[in-house]
Length: 158
Image 1 (cartoon, rainbow, N blue to C red):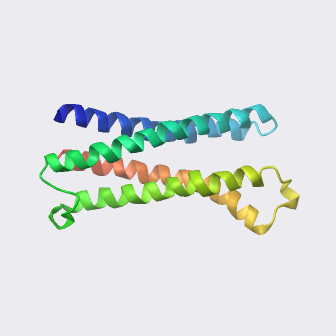
Image 2: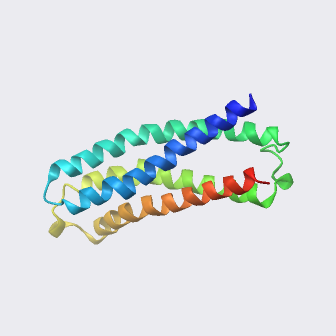
């Protein structure tokens, strides 16, 4: 059972982080380099929406398997004082990443869709902030996700 839980946890993390890497390192640069072609932007939006489903399923699996794996190591979610620092760090980063993902998917994403329909010359200062944040937030989320992977490697080796 333990091996199945670890495999499920790793596969879910691979799906989430791998998708983030693909979108930001492969698809986004293609879209950016072809600003004149609206079909590339439509492809990016479609891929991002489809990936959102994969990401939320992966998060559900991670949030289910993670506490079980902690319990297997003798650490319960209700006793954080017993956690080593690396566990506290990893779980804190997981909470941060979940908040960033919620912010991106539920608040920023819909707002960007609206602002994108407004000509750039007619956008307010707040609209500009939304668009700028929409570009930076996924990159920051990816960095947080990669740090989580690093903490997981450290945890697995301890």
